[in-house]
Image 1 (cartoon, rainbow, N blue to C red):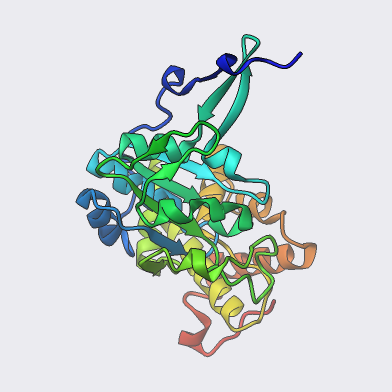
Image 2 (tube, helix red, strand yellow):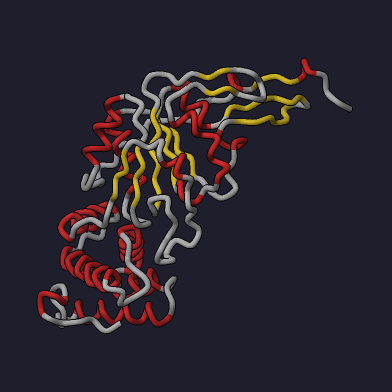
Length: 305
């Protein structure tokens, strides 16, 4: 039986605010473009930002912690190829036998004037073109209800991605989409976030060790040396995989459980091919034994992968 029009209502006011102010992480190390992101967040101006960088190098956490420090509410939306207008703007849902319209996270962020974090933006498809007017700071017409939504003061969009929106040339991020130029043009600035320096990464590792009650500065030194050699070799096209800052955190978590350096690394790198895993483990054992004490370039040595 077809429902009458008066049964089509809005659930917008019944839905709790999905945004929140993140908790300050005392172990977080501020580095890279953190101060710029924090300045943008504090400004409470509409100024969309696109942040690109390798997976696992702290892009999302940087935005989260900038919001935490500024005491700004934010809403995080993880995008995928299936994400569409209904997910972002809103759509009809069934509630107690009635058809109700539920506003999506984009509209909720606009109304509350908070930071909207579009995470993994380059995993989305052209279905996100529904955000064109939102990225211009304009009002949005909810076509399904006829309501016009105006952005509240403080509303802003920050997007994170592994690529600059042109796809992945090296094939590392096979699910990355080529985003429409008209869409990318709506972002005034792009921040490229590389890997942290060796000194910064050691601070990150030491903080993670302290948090996991497994502080071992010697292990931290050797881990960041190991990681730096692997990344340099990857940049020189010597290997196909790399160790991310996130994976270092996984190693530390394993170390806090097993208290065994090589076992912790082995379990964390098992996700790579057997050849790569064995090469990574062999490299670390050489560093741990003192056979490699710094980057290969400093000793004119080349690691064998």
